[in-house]
Image (cartoon, rainbow over all chains, first blue to last red; front, side, top):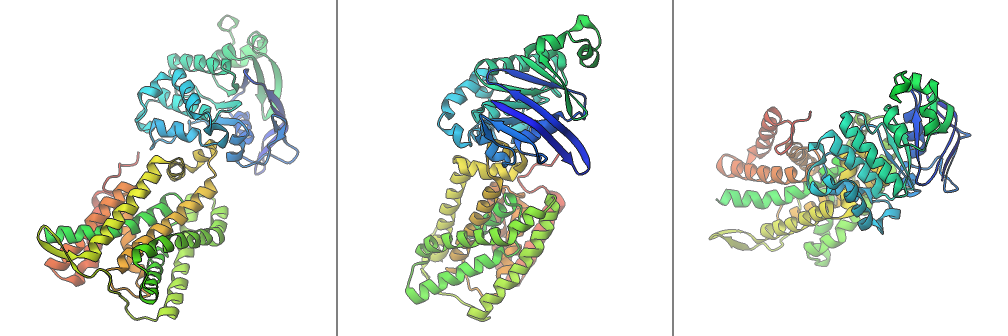
Length: 240
Length: 288
């Protein structure tokens, strides 16, 4: 569904990504593992149209070329990003944040049913409709961010370090919710530092190092891959 | 009591003018120093429509507001969008837009001086007494206040109860996130700027029904609007409305109790006090 080939991103003279190719399908979770600064965030931002991709990049969504489109038009093509730091509208209420999520034309018709789905996933958001988002806890704000992204009825949901700053318990809940989201038919592209939890829910994974993809495999195989265990799973096979 | 009523009536019109500026600054990030010129120009058009064609200024509003909307949209598209494009950050856009609209101020002022000369203008519209609690007030002022309340309520309904209005607020609080929910930030900012201009024009029309004005008076109203916006907290619609009422009452109190020549001085005294004690605005919260 989402196909990226030969993606390059440069910030001035610094090359952040080079020759990156990947694909994400409906209903499946792909996780992107890599160290800080490996280019994971740049990858998501380039797909979302927030940072420009280098010439030669090809990004296709459902067969249509989308590289070079403005960020707001990419949402209309069915790609939603939950950015690092969440990017919620803190001054606005939960209800308003979710309503804005459905601002995309593709989402307006089904707004009510999507809202039902979001409330079912995160009942807390239904209880706190009128609360200003900035007064909520980190975990609740993350729910708002994910809920808002889902409201745009994306085919692909991209998440940048969603568990950052959350307690282990909250992270577990969050990953459970992501699994349920994938089961309801959304494709998920996940960038995570928490390799253990994310490989547990993922179908496939990519390894990214110094701005290039260095490996791709099923999540099961990655969990038992000695290099992955050493680099991301604490080095003890038993922990994986 | 008379002071409070007169001040509140005046504050209603001030609120419209300030709401225009706060929309332009809050959502479009343009500190529009030529805002007062939009106001005076609208006053002139209302004057001309009334004296030459006998058009009721309230009816004139229906005509002038869309014109102001279109004109401000063009100003944004031609003059300000290049600045927005090249600005690397918000601070740079602020400095550039202040300089550009400062120039625009003199251009508009010059055009109006050319067209209408430097003399003072006023026209008689509903200049008859209206009793509130047994005291007489100008009916034109009461009507202007009621019209201001209606326009401001419409704006409030739009901003808080429609999808497009919520999008304007989203762009005001976080433009980077707004594009992630498919909002066309550039278009929304242009629209907010245009809408702000239309509101200020409405304020100008209402003001012209009871106020004597001339071509070079825009600056004073830009200043008043600025004071109100900063007092109310930048981008805060409710704060601006409250600040406008406070300013209206203070002006009236100083003018009737001390000396009419001191109203501007009172404006600034109030402004300094707010900056000293509530720099985040009267309703604003301290930034973290």
